[in-house]
Amino acid sequence: MRVMTTEPGHLERPLRALVTLGCVITLLVTALGPRWLWHSYGNYRLPAFWIENTLVGMTAVILATALILRGASLHLRLALALPLAHLAAVVAAWAAYNALAPQVADISEAGSIPRALPMGATTLGALLLALVVGRLTSRRRDWHHGATVFALSALLAVGLWLPIAASWYCRGVDWSMWHALAEQHPYRITGFVVIPPVAAAIGYTLLVMRAPAAARMLRWPLSVALPIIFVAALAARLEPPRLAFEMYGNFVHILLAQTIAVIATFAVLAIGLLARARRAKSMLASARRGTVRCDGLPLALELTSWLRGPRYITEAFTVHTPREELIVPAGIEILAPMPPETTQLRIGEALPLLRAGDPVLVGGFVDADPSHPFRGSLSSLPGDRGLAVAHAERTSFGDADLALVLWRPALAYLMIAVSIALPALAAVLAV
Image 1 (cartoon, rainbow, N blue to C red):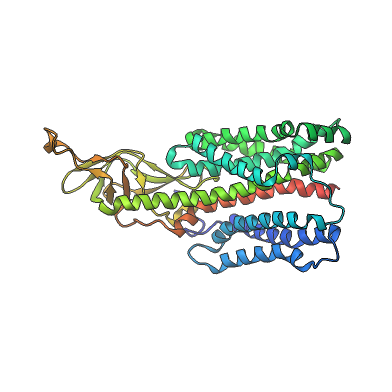
Image 2 (image 1 turned 120 degrees about the horizontal axis):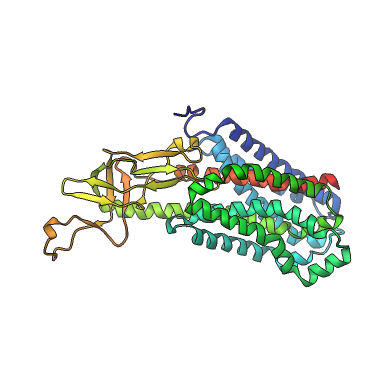
């Protein structure tokens, strides 16, 4: 048995360090970025205080709120607060740009790609695509998780492919040719940048949601391939053709739109989990109480990927009641709180939630048809609404459980955001 190095409900030390680093970088970027931009290009006649300090102030308030709240460990709360801080910063910066662009000296006209694919339409398209892919690649009860897995993997794939694609596309192209191509074929160029990584993200999502064992087999190949792709993206930004800087800039708004879509899928996942819990609780209002009888583990939590929370896995089992034996098939609706021990799960590990002999509540069974000639020998059957099963002593699902589901995707988002931001920073250093 693996020895636990931290308390249940708390993050391990490397993850705590990553969260702390993410908070520091977020505060530095939101503090220094607006100042540099306004001092370089701003209109000195306008008051600069709110322009320079609104983003960092808003970010600090969100992170401070996470410090004050209770119900989960400190770093877990901060991991969940960082995506909200980034969302607020992106939306505020987008609104400020639209409002202040006429007042900024020497600002260049938006490129052909942003004009063809405006930020608002791109954001809506990225979110709708995530929801559709999540539904098509996942079982119905898990489509919220599928949308999150796709949104995160697509953000990473596009973010790493973009600098490579820009450097590759612009070799041998001069300024006039680029502007002509971008003006005449913006969607063709966008397809070259977006379609290959999005296709890869769809394939990965399909494996994670439909074939977890195959996805685990890809873990080590990806752990080798992703650093190589990251280094290639970094090298492409350090020594690109000068024109590649402009092409990259034309697609930054797509990365920002994907960022908004990722954080929106977190909200969709939270709402979906709460809706499932409410539905299961309503089914348990008239539940039957019994005892689990089975050979294996009837209910457990398994971690298949860091891009989604733990998933429930079920096996068929029998519930013994004073009246009858109820046969519960696999794939039931579950109402079970997330144990704090889920923070210690590794990919491929499972945490038992029910064992043989545990008391359970089962909702959704209906009595056999009284007109049936052999009704006396018939057990109750699952109703049209399905079944809901919960441990008799653990029938709640609330905010603390949501935090234990969402913190891994939130931390994965933070690592992805850092990975795609570093090549952009490398370009600034190169210039």
